[in-house]
Length: 114
Length: 108
Image 1: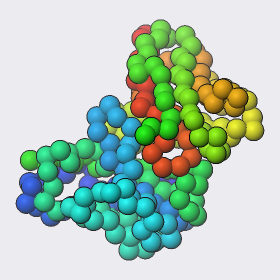
Image 2: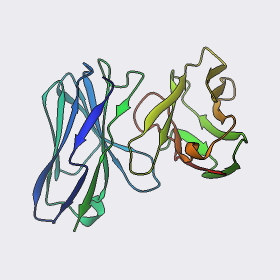
Image 3: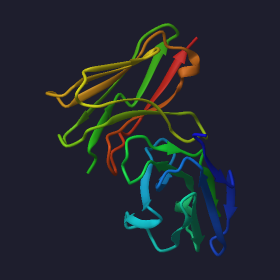
């Protein structure tokens, strides 16, 4: 199974809402990543978890809060977002530690902030 | 600071033609160079990758050519098909190392 799943596929939320994005993989990967992707741009790294510990935070605003409850799950909690946060949010995973050779991406969650 | 530069930004090729996308990098410590293919509304998928100890890698219609001295690598898509129409990103192993992407359109 080489699949990374993400839920929901689409999310529309107001600026005062709290919502969460979920990512799951069952490949035994110990590094998991959150990326943000705007239209016609490359994925932009947000967070990296390695062995369930946050190892990289790319100066992401605190309205984004990641969580890694176990080695298969990665969440991104959203609160008080801005319209410019509307984007495709991608989860990825790779073997053992960050920047192992292959990254497997999920299909993404299309987020719209109104 | 972008560590991998990709060109062209967009590419239109006739069906059956060869598509060529180029990337250049600066950091000689990079040791793995993947190419990702992304269809609209989907996540990137690893297409093919190369390490700097080889000059070429071929998988089906997709070939990576690697020039270590020039710090350049390229993706060649032979016999391009309309189903290859997608955005292609080159990358290097490490953070913030995606190229800007190339939108490929293959005309029937």
